[in-house]
Image 1 (cartoon, rainbow, N blue to C red):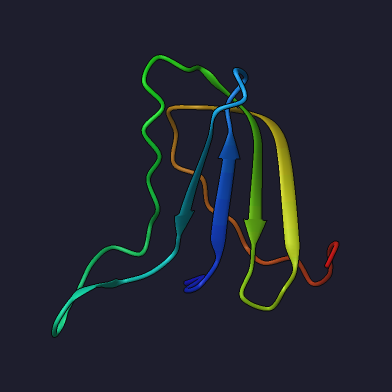
Image 2 (cartoon, one colour; image 1 turned 90 degrees about the vertical axis):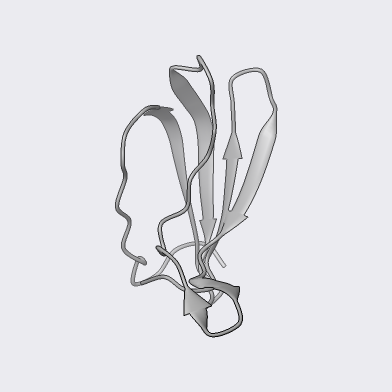
Length: 79
């Protein structure tokens, strides 16, 4: 589920957003583990960096917005 992974997103105008994969929302409750970024009218994402809990980092460039993406932790990437 990627719990603990931190996701950093950079838009073409160099604004950035951070989010972390978690299901914790309060006492004795949980939520969807998907992370969501509000991008407004932005059609493309300049960069997405995923920092997995293991320390592995993955970076994607020039990604289309307005979609659901699924990632799997790479066996090895930059640390």
